[in-house]
Image 1 (cartoon, each protein chain N blue to C red):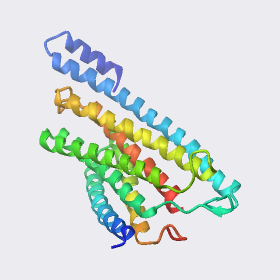
Image 2: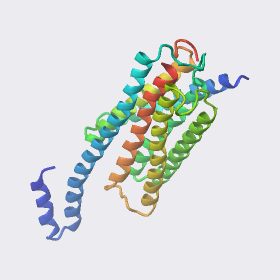
Image 3: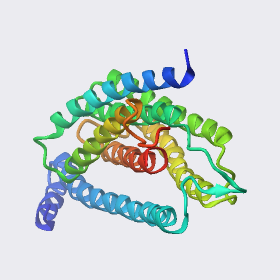
Amino acid sequence: MSVSIAKQGYSLGHGHDEDAHEQVIYQETRDMRLLGFVLFLCSDVVLFSAFIFAYIYLRTTVAPAWPPIVGGHQLPRLDTAFATVNSVVLFGSGVTMHYALENFKHAKLRGFNAFMGLTIVLGTMFLLGQGYEYAHAQIGGWSGNIFGASFFTLTGMHGFHVFAGVVYLLVLWYQASRGVYTKERYFGLTAGTLYWHFVDVIWVGLFFLFYLW
Amino acid sequence: MDLAVLEKSVATVGAIVVFVFALIGLKGEWPKNGLDDIVTKLLLGLMAFGCLLVLLATAGVLPRGGA
């Protein structure tokens, strides 16, 4: 939105229509904040891409066999069956987050609360599943071999993003319950939804690379 | 029942449900053209693709060498 419109809104603010003024200012800053948030997500894509390309390089160029041979024995593949369940849990949380935002946009607060709560529960379940997998994966530790190093680094980084996302969603839920967001002004929830979708989509890539490739 | 079979059954049902709801969400977003709507469409589409990957895994198509 152009600055001239913001100025128009500013002049309205000094007149009798404070709400219209605030709405125009909000709209302009919303667009800028949204662009900033999307750029933040792009920077996170770069971060993950660097590690993903390092993994692809190690797997295709450095290691003679995959999973690599350690101590004369080839490491086993990861547990794909369990990972499919954990992946569906995370993808499901992405869908529930989408519907939470849609419910909020249409002022359906009961639906919003239900879907938001479900999203947080599913996100937490994914983290617990990841913890279970860490405890049972027989691919050595973080520093044992390139498979373990790649797996724990990338999924650990992703897990940290999920953890941060769960905390983020809890804060957003609290703010929403305190009336911080309205039907017209809900940028925080939009950003939270985009972040959560982003975390889901990163997992699509990691799921393929570590379990299906 | 073998645990892996049970896990794959749960994942199959879950992936189909999530895939359908992701497509419904995508259909609702389709006419919108804001930056957030475009990013949402992209990410929902990729999430639906993730569900297809899960279905391929539970069907035994991926990984090619077997899990």
